[in-house]
Image (cartoon, rainbow, N blue to C red):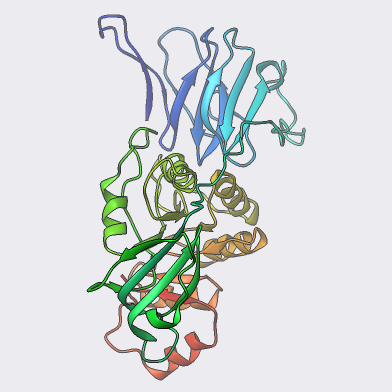
Length: 369
């Protein structure tokens, strides 16, 4: 990507910086520095005056680059006088002083690096969950209770719901309907438990805006999915939608997600470089801070990279849902390495005893799609 300037007519175009894996350039008000994002981390680099362009990379180049974040950065903003850079990660606002980022003279190779701030200002707030208080009785339906091998089917059944909890299920004749309960006749209907779509995709917002009504969420509910898990989505949108659902601001299933995938492909918007356990831990903690309960181990090319993601997620008590990738040997390694699931079909027509024996001795689940 490039940092480009023009005059007010859109002419006099000048390229000031170019970075193969860089995005989110933000120039300081005085034009002396530029903040950029690479590998989900925040960096600051001096900006040359005039029209000369330079190569930009987190490792430095013609000009030094200082890493300002430790576990991810988003939404850069300079103070009006350019003396401070602000960014957020999850609910926390971080700040770095520009004067602390660069030394007057070149530093020795073994000199300590800029210590990225570990604490910031919390922008979180407590909002009451949306909990109904009424008592409702659904009567007359055929109920699939899943309480027995045959599905626990109850004809002419009744379900009593108090607040947000089911308190009674059984034949209508044997279920006592509390006085004052709202009774809903659902004769001719079949009631099943809410479905969990463990691999659901669908838009949750656009340009950080969450719609009041989302066709994807409405369709999920209409098809019986009361909980979804999206293993690849934009963190700044899906976790907002999840919180809005829990507080009753939007109608949707319960929403869980990995946020952005921990991706091995070299694309500026999504690349997550994993060359150490610390790299993996930073990515896992970044996603956890944004609201994830799971991470997507997505096509990191080397096995030891994928193993580092698993180890980091386990250290943070998070699930790991890897991309199967339709590669049998890789799928087997995902099972052996302790991933929580294998997402997508394993590319075999038949599962033979060796694979079945291996898989059934692990805690790795299978999500064929």
